[in-house]
Length: 247
Image (cartoon, rainbow, N blue to C red; front, side):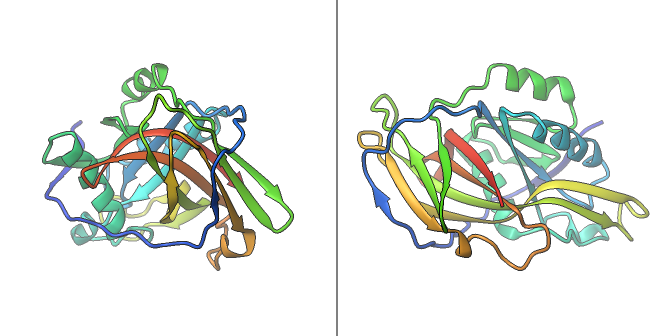
């Protein structure tokens, strides 16, 4: 069965966030070997198997799983309760960075480098088998602050540091559209994505964030991920490192 397809590109914007950066962070061991970003929609009949697969991947200790709900299928009968134009823009930017004009759901992007059909378990597993993140990102609570440490590595190019907040779990009764009548369980549902600052390969980075500013009123919004990702000509490149934190 073919995935849902959509075409076109829109340039998105990012929000700023208060941060403190200091060079020379100490290198610390990390376990994450892959970031899996699922582009999905509640209005896509072929997405539930991929949503379920992401849930199982999230249970692995070496995978950072994130679900971005896109908005370009909202017109076909059901408006996704988590959809955001910025998430659709991110998927389009990935496609453009690979020289493609094709986007679809469900799609899983592994480490910002490879896109596969998110419902094809074997393709996803093959992509994960060779995945590796070169940087170990450390997240440590220090009182009312969250300390982010990313070691230096002069073999890599400078990159951006992103904060991604998510709902750990969400239960949705879909009343219309292609999945009408289904009661869906979604995990790692991204609610917002903000840039924290730059990671410099020569010095590394240390960022301290007030925990009070990391939560919001969303019920169950109890998790965040920090991603270190290259950017090329304004488009997302490979993800170099990642870590998650639960409140």
